[in-house]
Image (cartoon, rainbow over all chains, first blue to last red; front, top):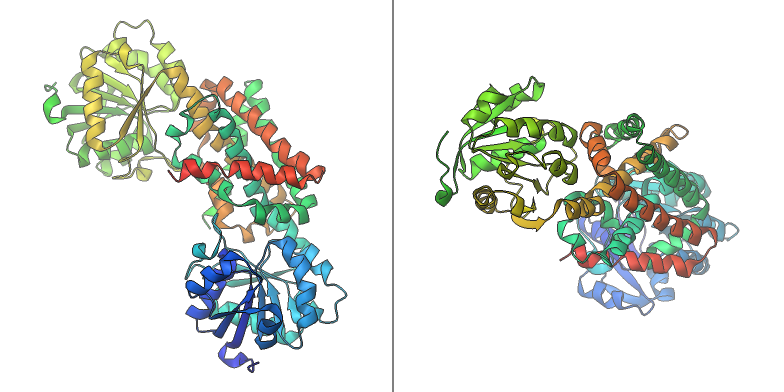
Length: 291
Length: 291
């Protein structure tokens, strides 16, 4: 296990569990910014592992215990249900290694290791980047710069862990945002999880119509594509996110259905002024998107 | 009034009413493909007219009667409620000119001129392109190629009108799709109008939350931006579209709310298999978006 060279923003060896879109993209960033000397993929027998090795995302594949033994930093980039199961086992194997995750939910994970003797070696983290694709082939270079990287409750982790991770993230060029796990999960429900539900539901709405109208999609425009793009996202990633963030997602989903009902009501009652007000209000999103 | 040179895919003079995003973009296409010799903007006293002249979208501005008198082809690119009012008046001024519109709804417009003696000089049309922006400054060059151009019920127009328009559209590089006005309005409700409603409602959902959570948008990701982008679209364009396509939009909105309720129910009942099925089904949208 190499010494962590904080001053040079280098970690010697990084072990990554989960070599898909996010794990792969993060590995590329560690390489591109010369942060990691070596990247080990943790072998658990998934097809993505050989692909990641072939793509040069990792230098070698090793079983978990061996990989963690050689690592300075362990990155968990697996679906959030797997992460909750595996993080306690990873921490069981940790001596002085640092561990971060990349998951889209935080509360359940933080609870899962609340009493663990090595809890302080773990820093809950979440890079705010993704695409609707998955697998190591979907991993991309140079896409994380300028994106947000959330660190949760850093006071519950050892200072050397948070300091090292902060240096790495700054070197990659991401903006660090701090919040606790509960705030994270509420925010994400609003600015990410609900977008996925509306996309999934919109796709299903139109696919339902396609059963009667063969050529309904011939006219699909860029506006339509924009709103259903996220419906390509896979259930393996998203069901566990919705499971773990159920209460927050239900809150925002209820609010969203009630907002849609206002549109429905304005149409049914032919209340065009109300409809104009609803659209006018939604236009305030410009100040957010254009800033 | 110049002779229409069908063989060379040229029209002499084009008069355009409505010099915003769509009118401007279409004017650029007519110029870029050397289809029009002259483009006259019809002056009705809107601020966009002077801008369009300054931007070179039109060669001159003339009052409606004079402009139509000089034109071979008249293009109406105004909000659909204005179009319904103005098309009969335009046809009143028409001798042998050709008239097309660019509106997002068709049934109401077709009904509005059903008995007009010059009805056959009019061809209902709809280019399937747009952005969330508006005004002549938002008009773009070289964006219509490969996009769909819908022509409705061409059998109700004089053959020289549809033939000339078809040649122009092919020259621009758009794909022509034929359907009647009723089919158009159903299709558009599914592949365009509902996307706008979901975006407007999603923006309102999150803006509502912002009232309690100051920094809710700090984490907004590209996925969120993608699903709310259309919420920048203006009420002046969209309220009239929803007014004219009320029944179809309500049908699809009701279906969409019921699809969202399935997500809600799967979360409330923690029926994760059902949730996975819903997402899995929505993934079928891939075959549409990627083709």
